[in-house]
Image (cartoon, rainbow, N blue to C red):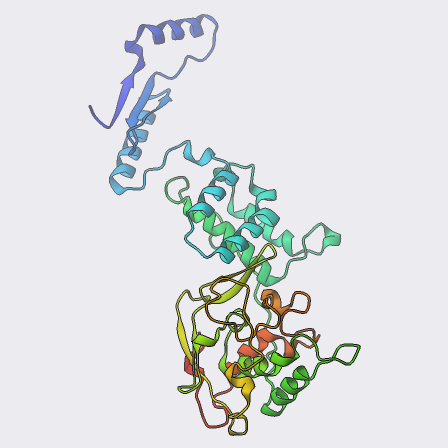
Length: 366
């Protein structure tokens, strides 16, 4: 049997009876010509036309799309967006933190707008107008999103719709939508003296009772490490003694801490791969026990406790989200200055080419 063919319904007694009944009632008779075909999955499909040339054009269209591999089920675009978003998210081979970010964007911005609509009802103009509304102030009915947030929302929406092409959509309606430009960033780079002053001040933090804070013992080393190696905050938090080679002056970045829904967990680094980062110790501090995981290093309660954590302060580790800490268990980062946030130290490391005895760190930034 042919994969696509045209059927003359006038050959069936049932159709002739329907046509006669419509004629007596002075109504338009049902379509005479029916295009029938089997889709790539082997399911039978059909569509009725009043005139034979229309049916022939449809048959040619289906035959060509099947030959080109671009066939799309006419009813496939009727599926609701929230159903496709759920299928898309389940199919993504991404890290837990990335999946959580996608979930937050879908639930917070995309599904309230598009969730109940058929994906075929989403148009280019509608997406463009919606993104513009997201950036409007709340007083004007918008969401007051910045350029970066708006681009992230568009990215997730576009990925879901792109996943539907060509099986359910001919094109991605979110593709090519105008996006806001990212504002230029004002990078702040500390001098060597400023880094030293910051590390010293953090190491000398005291409570209101005049006692050292819970993290004062590790703050200095942590800040110097972040500033001159380019480690990410989560990578430094998860650093273990076994991954620090003081003789070769190398750090193996094997794990990193992430936070999802308030839960801190250990995972692979952001790139998904291990890497080795060189570091250099100033000669004046070669004998400082704080550089070799001395008495300040304690056991970590997070997974992989076979090797103690370098920056554990009391059985737990610091939260990594935006450089904040939970309670008093991690390195202090309460400064309101953007230049002193832990994540900024990574940018400082990229700008710094050598430290003390000339150890290059720039090639190891990723």
